[in-house]
Image (cartoon, rainbow, N blue to C red; front, side, top):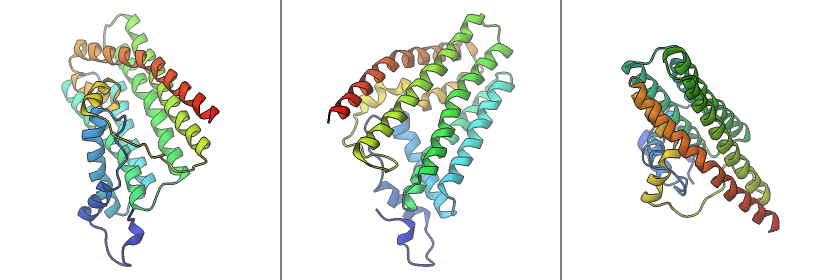
Length: 253
């Protein structure tokens, strides 16, 4: 794969050249949900090309992503729900998510990532996965007259999201350990059909972010958020069983 280091000395990388290089070095779409596959990764590719031409490093892109994401999360917890708030929060969170995809692509353009960069990326992801549901809980408690039992929904969603995120990261780490690889991302072979990408959309972080467009209409938001929570709650045991069986196979290999 070509990297920034392959340029002749003094030649400036342009956005079109960076985009072309990224198109030829994309991760497999195997297992990717529809929003991440068709919207977030392509948008992240554009941001990565721009960031690389500006000379930004992957960790700087991660930091910008974190600032935008947590700005949106703080707004959810501190400002009464309204149409303007919903639009602002959605834009901040979606931009943060796209930049979260861009940091790894910037790393590929610049010759590969680092363990420290991956650690930073995962820590930010872990904190935002928790914080977004805490912010929803605070908003419901402060600004709505929902029955207190509804506050259990964001708490349950938080647990389900964290469990799935930890299982995903730990499974990836154990695969690397088994294969004796320190690569940031182990190559996943194959592709995923459009039907599958749509079927797993309820588990896509991007869909959760889009749900904040309904924040001004709290009954609709609560209903959609609750359905997403239920879908994630049901899929966690299935994912755990699949990962556990995979780890058993690796242990026997």
